[in-house]
Image (cartoon, rainbow, N blue to C red; front, top):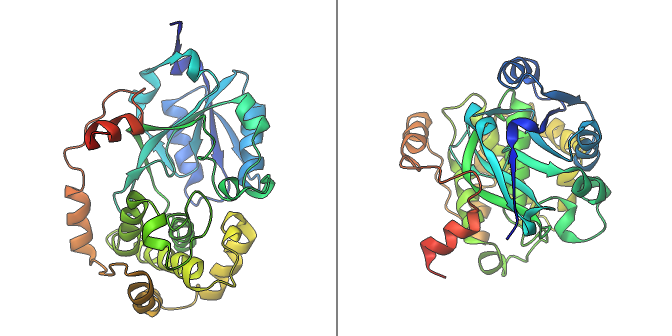
Length: 310
């Protein structure tokens, strides 16, 4: 079988920013790490921003770094080893979330093809399918990878932390992009997503503005599952999220976090047990403390199949 080896250092690298509070400081770090990096800033809409990144790339594949992400330099010394089946694939690696310690694709480094981005229709440009309304990941050639090569810091301000939590509080409830009913919730939502959702709801008070991430995630879940009149697809709208934020930003976050907790327990049977700063720090110190990368081309699904024996 023919194999294609591509040095990641030979790919264009695009730093994609919008309104992240620390984006200028992060840009300096990235330029020192990846001197050939380019930057796309201020494009509203996730689909449009990714298309602008693809247009800026002179290589057919390009590395994408989100505006609140700090990469591991080792990633750029790695090599993509592609079989024929991989030639039109997009790859996303895990990131460690600074707020709560979770390690999954949210905010992680990714390698796209220009052709994939030019042809996709997602978020504000969705083709109308639930799978593409709020995500990229349900395309069959969008591949989740096992290894973790960066840390994401979505807590540069109260708003950024709240928005990060709110978006995941919505997305972790969905079944392939569609909202399940309350009775379907536990059966239709993947167990790994429920685990991540629980961590978003309860861990992170040791981080700057971490309490607002907890508030946001609880609000996102509550509005998605218990407020059926709210259109969950608005989670992809920057303007809609800012409007929601303006409605709560002057509130006490400790009180807000508790207001919906009872309903999340009673109607969704979710465990609500907000950890204090010391407990959150302890959780993050020991959560996946024995983690080891297995190789840049190892797929998440391959590891899960091996672990679960299916």
